[in-house]
Length: 458
Image (cartoon, rainbow, N blue to C red; front, side):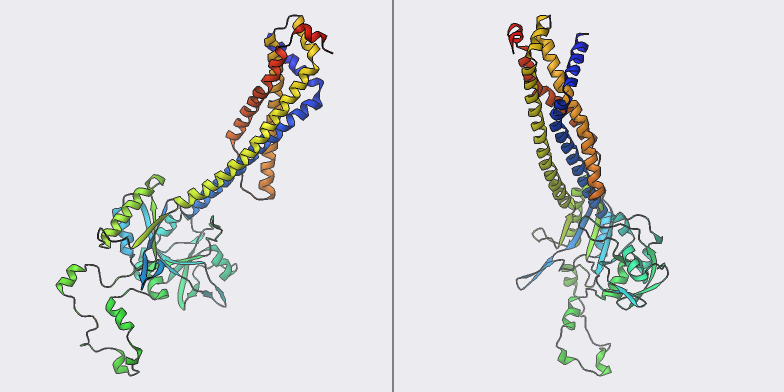
């Protein structure tokens, strides 16, 4: 009963000065609203980054050829031609931490349909596993090419939505023929829309075809033996225009027979097809590092590298990019949160100041209550209740203000936001804590007043 009477007395005292109470809570309203708005904007940004990384393949490992150097000049990453489709098959077969993988052969050229042309951002020769690697959803139209198309080097392809809009302008592309570097491809499917990635690049601006078709028919490149390279770079003065010398006779020996010693020392095939990169997917986030270790060990063994040889390939993952972006977002969110917390502190100081003024104004009232039997703890409790109620009211209004600001930012600026229940709970707890922390001293000062001196106070 005493607690209830103390609470009722505190509420009655607050109702006597509604304007002062409203101004007192204003700092808490602004501080809590700022905290909630910043937390929701930060959570939305982090979620958007995670979705962007996921759309690119959160667990994707990018395996690139190594760097070649000629006469002391480094030619850049991917200049070696050391990766083969057989490497991709071996990774799938012998690396338990990898769930799927796909080879990729890149090309860059115009795609022509009728009197219209389009240059896709990405032309990839790959396998059907590419869709699983990139976490592409269902096909919008048609179907993906299959392994039989790869084996037969069929001229089929699937297009992204951006390419379809650029070339067909509302027509259905299924079954239509397009030309890629004067090679006719039949469109068998349209990929589902994926949108832009976290770097802003349009992922729907893409053409996919069997890697064997792109490699042999479009790019027209195959790594031959060293003998062929030497013969192709021979002096052009030896070339004649007579048909008899265009093709060597059956007795000509362009490729000398390898000795048994050469075969034993160089067991790699003289002729093989290289790919530009291999995309592999770890089974989960915890399997990324084991998968990298297994891939490195496997490729070194397949490429017959000695212990002191450098890797002729490079394995990269998305973890570093994701961690960098997430840490940047967290840093900005924490910075804004610190600014919002300062607003809370300022609001708490304002409450303490107003409560001290209230104690001074109500000194005679306090003395009268203590003269008729009120204990110091009752006075302490009354002023604490007043401070906590003011902070809780400010916290409630601040929650509504923060949610409204978050929704306004999402609507007007199209920034991603996400409801943060933890921030709301923390705001209520902080509001009560500020009330207790900054309201205790005025309440303690009121409870320590001498009743006789208080009654004499003018």
